[in-house]
Length: 366
Image (cartoon, rainbow, N blue to C red; front, top):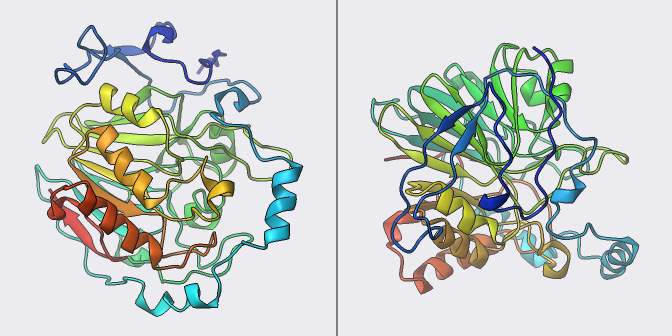
């Protein structure tokens, strides 16, 4: 297919700054926004739907999408001086208590959506008849990080055929090459702008790269790529060469179920905008770990209280915490995220049954 160069919107661009749609992109009418929840016009902008597998050209850098500057030399020096890279011995004593309860995957019943937490940001999502993996990391160890504290919650051999994979961004704990090598090369990959070349070099033939607020549809399931407060980097020289974001998956022909997968993100204005453009989110998969020290990680990782606030901003009915209990990435005690998210949920007076604080390996369906 012919490559096209597109100019990305500036960081923080809102509905009024939407780019014109190219001829081959379909327009999908927005659903009405609940009264008082959206723009003054009462509707969200129409979404650009791109063809699956489209080959595109992108800018060399997405640094203009950063919502906060990357840390400089002084910040790294402070982190080294404080030595706050890992929990102290007391914080690590909670490892035996980390929730781990693997169980068989639930049947993919028509009209239902089910999620199974494999650990970290890896989910087995059954929606619209498809099996979708999010940020699949089945490796025991990732670069620069101690081995997993808990095993993967779903054995690779127990997975049903995987129809699609979504990747949130190019960090080793979210884009794991050894895991992707286990997949058939014709598996549909949905990835951020700029990451397609990396995937195609590894033999994948159905790679769809999307910009923020674009979507693509596979067998009746719509994959919408949405902004996040984060960044990307895989080597010393490729910071922000590829985009980062989250995904909204919608069963467009069946139950209408809608799941938001945040990937990796700090707290900020994007959650409210995502909720306006995707009203009626049934379940938000939100990160609650890797947040300490706060001065170092505030801009790129939500803490448990911010995750609950993000769920409210999104207007999501349910929340499933993730991005904790798997790898030691920061300095908070390993069991602290669960205690804090439960307390924050209770303070917000939200229904307890709508907090899906699953053990690794467990499933839930709606």
